[in-house]
Length: 273
Image (cartoon, rainbow, N blue to C red):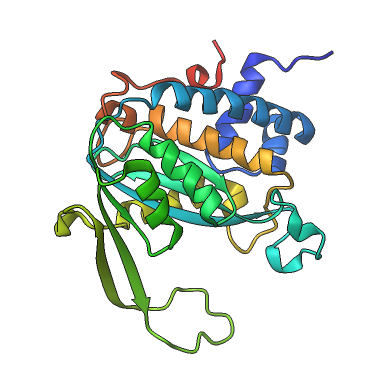
């Protein structure tokens, strides 16, 4: 069986982490798109293992969580009745946590926007932290129960809800409505009101959409399999944490959080010597 040379493998992954689509990567590197997908899934498994190994006993203080939408195979409204029973297709949400101080992504979870996925996400986040934190989420209801199960009373938790103006969007308008009011609600503990914020994690959502082509809106780029979506996200977050130097911090998030003492090469993250 033919094995892709390491330099080609690295070229493929370099193109993917910079937001190129599978077909544009095929044109740039000369590697067939099916081979690119196999490389992506393999690299994604390595990156997921790396995140699981390194993101432990983290000293984060202020954590923000949010969800970003995408879909697999077809959008939820297009699913037939039998297809709606399949949790691997239709609308999917990436639950993301970010340390507001170091910009580190300690964990993520992909699935339906429901209590089951929220429980997995919050439980995974709690298992990676070494201290009490202040946690801010949006108004999604299942967070309350999931945080209670994970931390009990040992967390300072608030939810931030943005109220938008009611207006007729009109045809062809793609900009979001104006924020009319921001409502902050303390759920548990004593969170610092000045740090009750979701701005950093919402900015991270933009980073995801810019760096992962299948998240780009109003295009024909999307995932055909849930495993492919999980793989590209694992690659993105590993690259973001360990390789990409944050322009504000001037170090990688992993360095700012004390997880690493240097900037990693992309080859180290994906297992290319």
